[in-house]
Image (cartoon, rainbow, N blue to C red; front, side, top):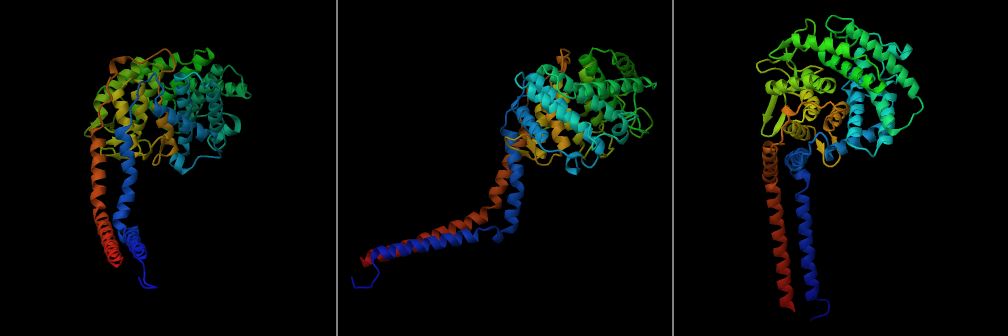
Length: 463
C-alpha cells in the first residue's frame, strides 16, 4: 500500500464517523422544534397518562379499620405541610375564601384524629401536629376580627364549630400521648367558652340551628359540624352540653325533608328545600360521628338518589336528577352533574359508612382529575383545602365505639373499567401521534447503516 494512502482501518473509522454523523442528524430531526404540535400534545397528555396508570394499577385498601397505603401517604403530606413555615393561607390554599381556612385546618385535625385511632405508635408526633393546627386556627390570619380582639365568638359559629373540633382533637391526642403541654390550659379555657356559646346559639333558635356567621342563613350542614364538635367536647371533658341540641336538631331534620332527604337550608333561599350533594356529604360524615344510625339513613338515601357510577369512577351529584342549579362557592365546579365538593367530601362519608365500592370509585376519580403524583399522596390540581379534605376522607374511621350500621357497607371495590380504557386509549393515541417522528428516525438510521456498509466494503477491497 502506497505511503499516505488511507488504510482499511482508517476507512472503517470513517464509515463509523459517517454513521454517527447521520445519527446526530436523526436526533436533530427528531427534536421538538421539528414537530411542535405533536411534542406539545405528547407532553400535555403525559401527566394524565401517569394519573390513569395510578388509577388503574394501584390497589384499593378501603377498610375503615386500617390505615391504608394511600392514607399513610396522605398523612406524610399533612405532616410536611404542618411542619413548614406558616404565615397565612392564600389563593392556592383556600381558593380566595378566607372563611375556608378554618375548614382546611379542621380537616387536617380530623385526619390526625383518624390516624391516631388507626395506629398506636405515633401519639407524640400526632399531638404536636395537632397543636400546630390549633396555633394556626387561633392565628390572626385565620380567626375573625372579633375573636382576635377579645376571644368573643359572636355569630361566627362556623369558625367556632371547626375551632372547637380542632381544640377537642388536640386535647384527645395529648391525652393519648400522656403529656400536658404548655398552653393546654389556655386552649381548654377557649374550648369551654366556645362550647357554651355554640350550645346557646343552637338552642336560641326554634330550628335548633345557629347562624354560620353574622347575618347569614342557617345551614344544616354547618350545624352538623357544630353538634359533632360539641359531642366530642363532651366526651373529652365529661360534660353534657350536646344531647339537647342534638335531640332538637334531629327532630327538625326529620320534619323537613324532600324525597326523604334533608333540606339544604333553614330559611327561604332558592335552594332551601332542594337536597344538595355538598350538604348531604357533610351531613353523612358529621352526623355519622354523633348519631351513627341517623347518619347511615341519610347516607343510604343519598347514595341512592345522588350516587354516580360510570365505568368504575364514582361520586355524587350536586343537584337531584332533573335539577340544574349550576356551580357556586359551596359546590365548586359542577361538571356533567358531578359535584366536586359533594364527591370530595363524600370520600370520608363513604369510608366511614363502610362503603368500599364508593370509596374506591371516588379515589379513582380523584386520581384521574386531580393530577395524582405517584407514591407521594399529592395532587397537582388540588388546592390545599381539597388536599386536606382528601386526607381526612382517606383515613376516615369511627372515633369511638359508636360505629355506623353495616347495612350500607359493600364488600367489593369494583373494577376501574373506565380508567383502564382511557389509559389504553391514551397510550395508543400517543403511539399514533409520534409515529411519523419514529418513522423518520428509522429512515436516517438505515441511511447511516448503508453509508457505513459502503465504506466497509470499499475498505475491504483496498486491503
